[in-house]
Length: 400
Image (cartoon, rainbow, N blue to C red; front, side, top):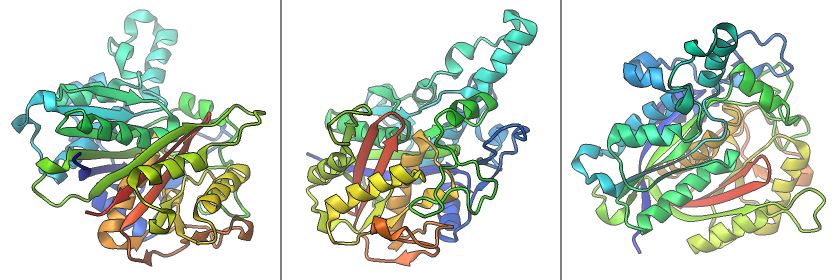
């Protein structure tokens, strides 16, 4: 069975446009979290977010597609162009039925949808754009990427909130095993419209802090919720047997679980997801060099993740990091971005930092990489993700 390897990375993140700009900003500890600038948030209890600033869809997205698609899809279109160029792939040179698209999204096109609904209520149905029927749909990105690049192999979309970014990559690896030659995968989300933000506030998990330096502090005594964000990453995953250039690494293991409902006597299943992903990769806990944590920033959820890691790794303090403290949680785009970050970390043999957290709570017993990057010998990285409602996913990436 051939390996699934990542040959191209495209990133649209709050602290960097493009994989290398994002990576440089991340190693420098540069945060993209700030007061939301797209609209007046003075009446909202949550005012901070990780917005993708400096992104101009006029420069990145053809005019016809701009009119048909939401901001979430604009970001994915641009990231996919970058990832394909990074991989050195011209889709026109490959058989259209050997290329697939599997992406993740959790909130749909809220920017597009809110705009058109406002037209409906203010002016009437004749003023609603025809593309309202598709642009808001969470599968729109997969469909538009498939059409734009002539990728007619099996396509799909995963809706599992933050865990979806890993689920999409797991399904991409499956499609390679079923015969696809190349899969465009990963995820983006852009749910910072007023309506989208309102829906997120209802979860009661978001930080209401006004200082970007203290609003999102996972695993610390100051944890009080997370900061939302937009953006994500798109990866080109190929069959290793067909690749002629050195890839970033391989998707060695993946697993997903679902937690029981509140009040159930059954235990949560994050630990099982991690152990199953390690078993799938044929890696023991001692073989993991770094963990990219889910890092909710909610005390009880941080405690649950720390407990799962302790149960898996025992007394060993494997380095743990949460670079999403510089972007906010990007929902479906967040885990895909963590996966891309893990591959860049393996490439450059350095662990990016968790910013703003001086040290984790001692009770968590975590070796959290805080403040500055840490040089380390990295061969294997574990990426952990949880989605609102009980979704869990874990993926293992390894060097070649």
